[in-house]
Length: 215
Image (cartoon, rainbow, N blue to C red; front, side):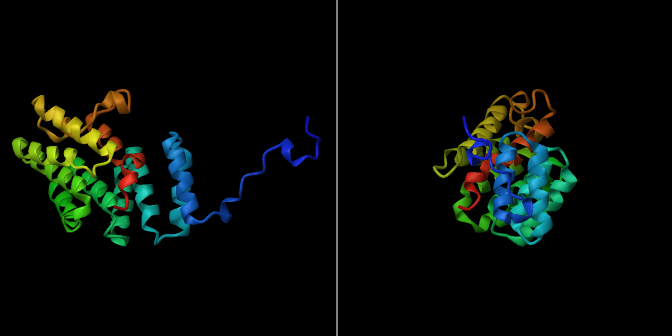
């Protein structure tokens, strides 16, 4: 048994938050988000944005967390700010476009996704966006070709491939509308949420495409 004054007797106190840098706050927020602790992740991301208002990734992560919480106005504010601060950030740009698309702003989504055309290294995201735009415009056969190319791209992240395959499966089942076809299985995500909510939560989840954030 350790003596009362033995430093091994109890864990060290947590570091004061004021000592943490932006990247450390974001890392903690990502860990909390992955563990399903929305309150903690939101707190870390908001603190990072408050201290570093020009940090693009802080706005991106805060926006994605708001989207997962079905707070689309706040999500849009921070995702748009992330893209403004770092136009070359492909995942934030894709997520901003998708958020606009799920809110019915097809032209706004297309405008944002045009920036992906300038980055050949993000082919899967670019093709996914094109496929969704074709889908909502009533061109499922063309959408299928784009989505198939995105899913088969060797550079596609596993989480992104799963979402694309889910869309392809629903097109094959005759569900050509965005909210039906672009949303993964709601039971897998929410245990019964609406398709629109499921789409935002799945495609905008921080854990989904984090591995492809900086291609």
